[in-house]
Length: 80
Image 1 (cartoon, rainbow, N blue to C red):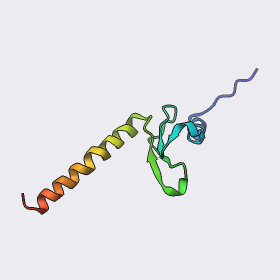
Image 2 (cartoon, one colour):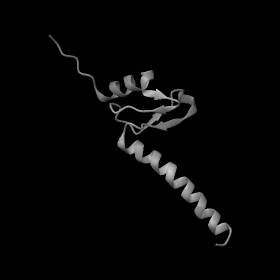
Image 3 (cartoon, one colour):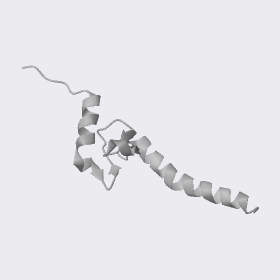
Image 4 (cartoon, helix red, strand yellow):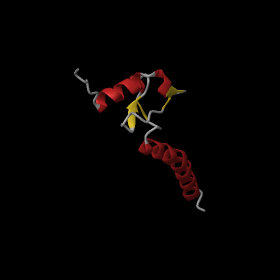
């Protein structure tokens, strides 16, 4: 009996296609090795894989870093 091996590219494609891995535009799959994946509607761009450690760090960076950057820019603009 021949055993068919699945490579990571096929796993990534299958995981991305699985609607259970998508929730309100967010993608979460620990089996998918990619950090950045096309959105569920690919022409709309890319999103992070929150099931991947690097993807989670990117999201935290956006959530913390962007408001911090805005506060810093506003403080410099106001001269304080």
